[in-house]
Image (cartoon, rainbow, N blue to C red; front, side):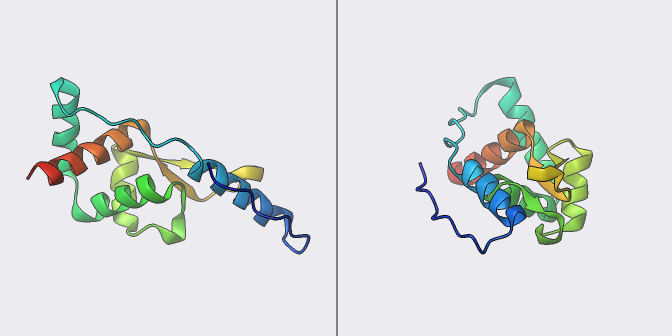
Length: 121
């Protein structure tokens, strides 16, 4: 669990809400280990292999860094590919702040399957 940041009266309420959301996201337990076997795992590996390099890099960013503002994703075309394949979704943060993307559950499974392929090679 992450420690608490000291209160700072000079920060705007929007920035404080962003920090709160960031802390909540970073304080979550890691995703459970996925055992790469069975039909679902084969489907996830197939999806991973079919992604472009830019989509793979963007999915890595979303899975490791969490919700990412549109201007900070590694690739706009990779983001669009992930959205089309339902591996990412557009989301709102605190105070309905729009313009962020996050990995979906399917996206996290596909990314973890891709990482397992790398380590088994």
